[in-house]
Image (cartoon, rainbow over the protein chains, first blue to last red):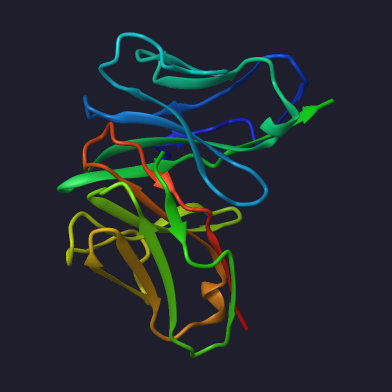
Length: 116
Length: 114
């Protein structure tokens, strides 16, 4: 069963506008972490933001914010004031228990293209 | 800032060769990971290590081995490289094993096996 679902294979956004990238997850573990990563065409995987399952407030990190709706099991990434350099693949990931440690499970990614 | 360094950005090797991919982190992290990333298959965990000299198999360990002799260094070894191991390899580290500990990645190694 798909643990992390990103339903948008690709998205366009106009420069300086905000964009929301969707992510839903599935877990029965009460303790988990949700993460967003950015992967430019050069290949490196850049950690952006994370949300803990017990966090009361939505995480924010500069222009990135995470819209965490626990009951709906969604953790959407919001990028405000898009820039051309935001064009990249974006991966949602969840860390959940695997035997004695925690495994990071990735979604299939969303390719974001920022138009000038 | 966490720095995870992979020894090569691009690597070309021949079938049957023994290939070493090196990864070093500078933040005294306990855990280190090796993934491969392929189009349509996403990121898949090959091996991980939660302590020096400790290793655990991930989802696709076949054809690979790892070595962690020092805390900061985690090596991925292709014992006898094959063309189906052509891929993007990503190393990551995290401070702890807990669910809230982010994994930080290196720049990746694009490996081609001819």
